Length: 318
Image 1 (cartoon, rainbow, N blue to C red):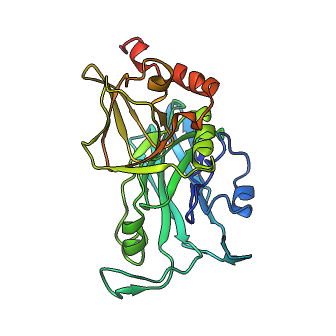
Image 2 (image 1 turned 30 degrees about the vertical axis):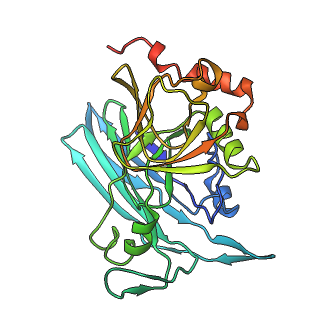
């Protein structure tokens, strides 16, 4: 039985807002060549089944890493990256499933002189970026995908076997990545970082996020600590929000209806309807939010966005 392939390219920004990746990924090599992704981790595996039991299995796929181009004044400078050896493991689960893991990544190309908190205390080479993927294949045809570990920066995006964007890492931490992610403080040493994963935003939200960040007027930025409220249900307001990083809980009448991750555009119902917040938004992690004026997005787009955000109107699960 042929297993699944899923990939994790990522976005990286040099003092600018990178466009989100495509909803569907057909050719990751073209993204690497176009400098729209820094690396990818392709995990492919298979199992052979007889009479409901796994009798053989194999591991395929590999990581790939591209160069990084930086504009300095009128010139573009391209820096080659250094891939590290892929790390693989396959673990049978009884006689009916196999769990495959693969870590791939390497050092990004741009030199980054910085002070670090442990030897050698001054680091010149770029930090290491990676993902650790897991894929479990069952004899009955089921498959389970996980992003189980990742470098704390940049954002990592997950695609399924059909090339559909399914999830992404919810938080990024550039300071920790730049000062810790090298040498033994990586999976090639003795450390991996667990990944906090969120569902992807809608295609409309991805389009609107680019409009907000590239509207010609730089939006204000807010930072929230875990537990801090962004909005309170019933308060008067007319601002829109773009969640840049972290996770927020959506509460209506004291009941948590959803948890949302980066890329979500929020606050449109207060703009369109009563001018009051219809839900409370509370930070589950440290968050970074862009604050946009109500005219940053046209009314028709806001109405379409609002139709997809009526979580309190949805029937209860179960």
